[in-house]
Image 1 (cartoon, rainbow, N blue to C red):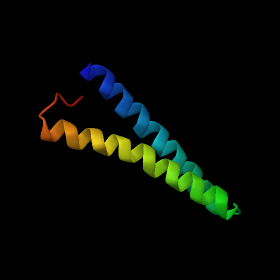
Image 2 (image 1 turned 90 degrees about the horizontal axis):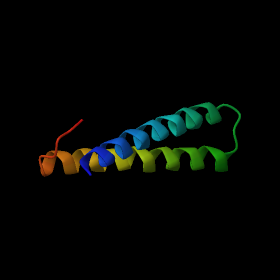
Image 3 (image 1 turned 90 degrees about the vertical axis):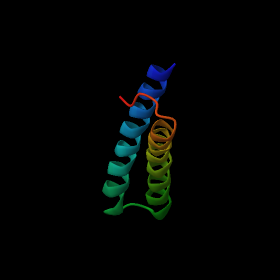
Image 4 (image 1 turned 30 degrees about the vertical axis):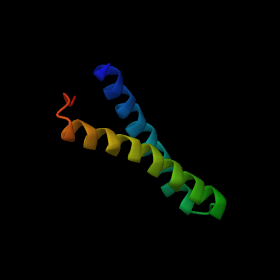
Amino acid sequence: MFNILQYVAIVAAVIGVVYLFLFCASIIGGKKEKILKNLFRSLIFIGIFAIYVVVAVKFQLPFF
């Protein structure tokens, strides 16, 4: 089960980085709605990874 959580955390971090890139790319000539949508999506996915890191440290789960 812990392996699945690790893979989910890695995928969430990668998706978050992709949306962060889209956010940075949409700043140049993008609409305000698109900019905010990409920013919030990136924060959500990177937040999922951050929550996993906090849980792994607090409960001493094997971390990667």
